[in-house]
Amino acid sequence: MSNDTVLRFALIGCGRVSGKHIDAIDRLEGAELVAICDLDKEIRKEKGEELKISTYDDYHKMLKEEKIDVVNVLTESGSHAEIVTDIAKYKKHIVVEKPMALTLSDADAMIRVCDENNVKLFVVKQNRYNLPIQKLREAIEQKRFGKLVMGTVRVRWCRDQNYYDQASWRGTWAHDGGVFSNQASHHVDLLEWMMGDVESVFARTETMLVDIETEDTGVAVLKFQNGALGVIEATTATRPTDLEGSITIMGEKGTVEIGGFAVNEMKVWNFSDKLEGDNEVLDKYRENPENVYGFGHFEYLRHVIECIKHRERALVDGLEGRRSLELINAIYESSETGKDVNLRFKPKRCRLGEKNT
Image (tube, rainbow, N blue to C red; front, side, top):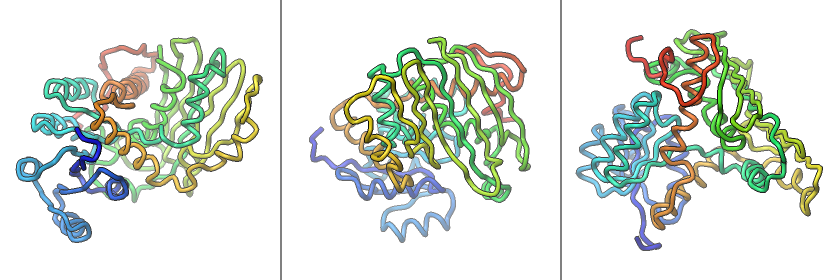
C-alpha cells in the first residue's frame, strides 16, 4: 500500500465516544470518514448533515455500497463480537472500542475470524499514548525499577443515575458490565502493560449508589507472575464530581505515580539511579497532554493508519485486547465465588456477557 494512500473510514455507532473518532479522523493525514451507521434516525440525520457524508441504519448495506478500508465499531460492548465477525467477512480492517468483547469465547471468535480473513483487528486503548504513560513505559523497558514490588491503579469517577438511564444497555451484564469492564478497563490494561502477566486475583464488588445490575464499586488484589502485588480500586460512586484516574508503579530502585483525571499528569518520578533529564520530567510531564480529551484517540488512530500502510503489528491487537479482558473476567469470577482465581481459566460464575438477566 502506498504511503500517500488515503484510508477510508466508516463508523458503526454514533454515541458518546464517536466524537473522539470523528475529530481524530478529520485531523489525521491519510484518513477520510466516508460513512456512518446508527439505528437512531435522529442521530443519523444530525451527523449526516454535520459531516456531509452517507448515513445508514444497516451496516451490511453500508459495507456493500461504500468503498471502505477501515470500520470503527463504537456500539455497546455486548454487540462487538457479532458486528466484528460480520465486518471481517467483508475483508475490512477493524477498530473496536474497549472492551473488545464481554466474554472470552467471543474475543476468541473475533480473533479467529479476523485471522481467517487476513484483516487487522485493533482494540482501542488510547491511554497508552498519554505522554506520561509513554515515559513510564520507557522506564519499564529500561528496567529502571529493578525488582517490581507493587502496581496500583485508581479510578475514582462520578457516574450518577442519570448517566445509566441515558441508554438501556448501560450497567447491564448482557451489554456493558460495571465499572471494571467499562470505565476501568483502560486502567486494567495499563497495569498489566507495566507489571506483566497476572498469576491470580481476588476481588470484591458492590453496587453502592445507583440502580443497575452490575457493580459501581470494587477492589481487586493481584499477584503477578513476577512475584509483585497489585491493587485495582475502581468506582463510579465518587460524589459529587470525578476525582482521578491514576497509576503508581513501585520497585526496588524507584517509584512513579501518574494522576490527573485520565492518567495524564506526572506526579512522582523518583529513581535511586539518576539519569540525565530526570530533574526535568515532572515539569515536562506535569500535565501532558493538557487537554486529554481526544488526544489518545488521535495518536491511536494514527498508529492504526501506520500499521495498515506498512503491514506492522498493532500495539493492541486482538490478542493483547483479550489479555485485559481475561483479567476482568477473572475479577468478576472471584467476586461471584469469593475465592482467588488463577488466570488462564474458563469462566464459570462470571456474569459478564450473560444474556438471560
